[in-house]
Length: 169
Image 1 (cartoon, rainbow, N blue to C red):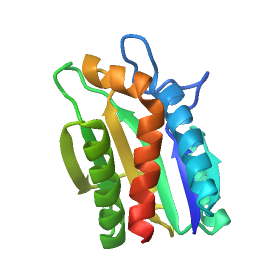
Image 2: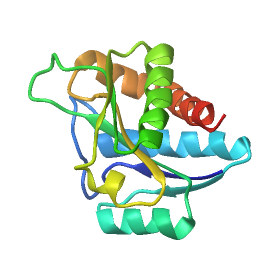
Image 3: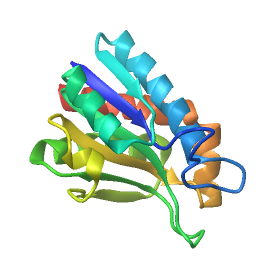
């Protein structure tokens, strides 16, 4: 299977959402790289892309001939009470992929389940030929979620990879 993983935002250029002591871009990079290693070890071809240029990301996905595209993000909110994992998808296949990833993260890490939501307005989800989802791992602006994102980064990566593999099967 040909898979593209996109770490949201760009370390050093665009931090994305910020928590009390970490940035979305750095966490997404770590999860992307760890998930890619796991997926490659299972025999998949994996391309990783981290860029602020949405057109370049979509172009890389289609240029690679990806079957699956997952954009990895950390959510942020004005209130610290917002927490949990959610996934955005556009197609029926994307919804199924999103369910597998959402369940894996929620079951493995115990994050609040915010479900799979309609994501056709999201450029990276609607501008590629691949089955595509955007995953919000957890809220970096929630103290408990931020702790999980930093202290259990490899567990997020494992759960993400497990969700993708579950979908493939």
